[in-house]
Image 1: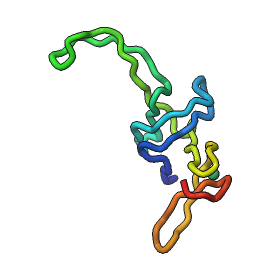
Image 2: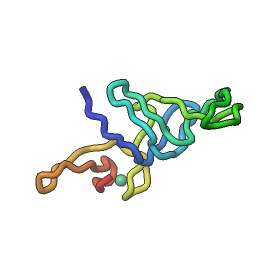
Image 3: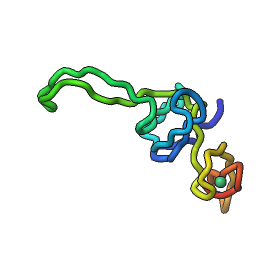
Image 4: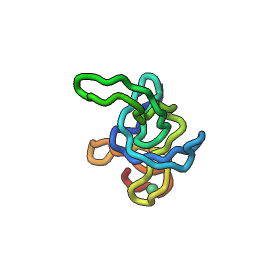
Length: 104
Ligand SMILES: [Zn+2]
């Protein structure tokens, strides 16, 4: 099984589908299902009922899970979406950008 290199709070760019080119922060990852939830990506409107916690029901915008293969991590060094590689430095595994070899 491939290791999932994307983590919560990473900035990612959508590389396919209707949200292609959109960037956002990772809010949730389901590694076993290869699904990911990204802030402001794949939003769908849902009708909600009023609850005790939230008195007002109505329309709520909620992100849907999308396939992990539809996104790439944005490299902090070169600012581009990239595939992630790994390198071991002083016994610590770090993620590197396959474009610029910089640490992601
Ligand atoms: Zn890079």
